[in-house]
Image (tube, rainbow, N blue to C red; front, top):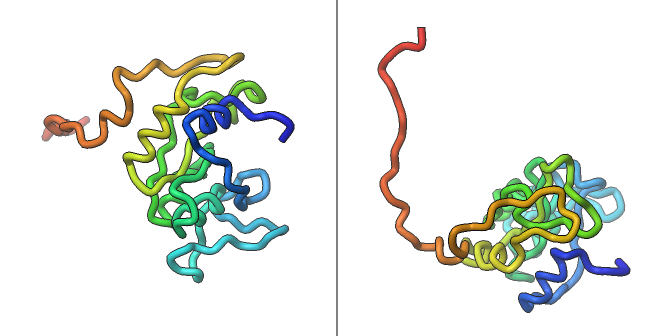
Length: 170
């Protein structure tokens, strides 16, 4: 690319190094990672299984411990599915939590988000702290968090409350 997106600029400002490019499916529209050009991306734990998709290359590289985290995007499960396949943390942030500026106002009508697959929840939270926030030209922004995401790691979760009733809806 001739220029970095705001998201990539934030990753670099946080001290991350762009290591390389990994495989993804054509158009990012599959929950598998089997591009015709390079062939299927294998699961790093069991090569008879898939790595998931569309960010399967990112998940395979992270799952194989080539990198501690890798950029991924998610519109319909493209962070979450590969993370589940490769034993990683995969969080799809709230729309507009991470900017897509300046090249895209929003992806897939707000359904697509940018983030990563990581080895730990702590890494996921720290990375979101480094990248979150609006960018120039964003059509809307997610509300700022009350405190850093990293401070939520290990925080008391409070009392779990589940609603239920014995009364029939009829």
